[in-house]
Length: 425
Image 1 (cartoon, rainbow, N blue to C red):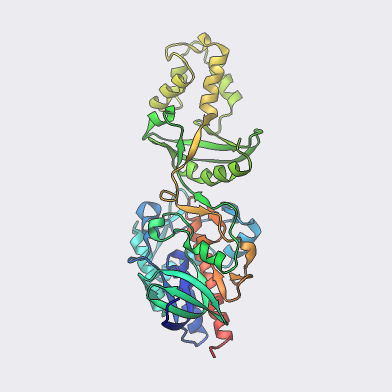
Image 2 (image 1 turned 90 degrees about the horizontal axis):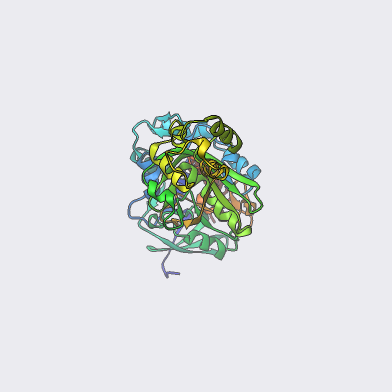
């Protein structure tokens, strides 16, 4: 620790979505209590909000019109639901409307700013924090946090600060260039918290075995269903959405959504596997009957009514079928191979593209170690946690931002209220 020790009431470590929200609501709660708390938000980035600015293709998917605990993985649904109910979608919309940011609902249910610019969202968050009296300290990376009496010593690049309370909002490991490099998880552990056995990229594209025929379809986007099965065949998870074929494998919402489930399942069941249906909603037996009834038509003509030409050619080749052969001319095993290719293509996944390309982190500090009413640690009194550092990750659609808003709100307001109840000596 540095020799110079400054003091503040509340140190928010990490000024991303959850951190800015926690700091803002802490400042607001203090003012409502008639206090002038010294609230500081520390971040190592020279320019704040990198993850906000790239979210939603630069438009920032602020939230989803309907959010439920079933949209998340990690900690238990009842625990997640309890936090989400403290700050719902309606309050998110009201907050941004108050800051002059109108949100629009798109067909997918996602809510974006009408400006279609993430900068609008970030500017609103920064202005709200400043208006709440928050001191934004950046670039000022925190490298360590230690318990010190009834408070904490926060070691930052600018020096050591003694804070009466701390809110840890450092994120996970996704997009490490933004500062989310796992340091916050190490800080939590150093203070006595546990971290889940597995911390992995979530919402991340998947790599297929080199030379797989899907790679030859690079650039093709189609609706498809991804299904995760246990080694014994049990259906574990499934997502249907837009699917993008790439030079390395697969991406798109369906792939990103199932990625963390595939990775986590493999730890306990190495034989777990992924399958892809190019005809979501059509089961194998129904497709086989339809092919048999096609009689004199070619398999290619039959498929072209349902799928893009490039994909039809690839499916025929993968099934060893001559595009000019009629369905009646196909041996039963060739016809069944085509049905399998259309409804349950086995995906030889070799891995994912890592944290650099991941939108979120799966794993983190378990919610069981946090008091859900306040987001205060059960292990370290005076420490609150919010955002992606916790073991909660949502699917594509603004759910991870909603978790940041809800958990940040609870952590920030609760920290300020606790400070108000125990004035500084």
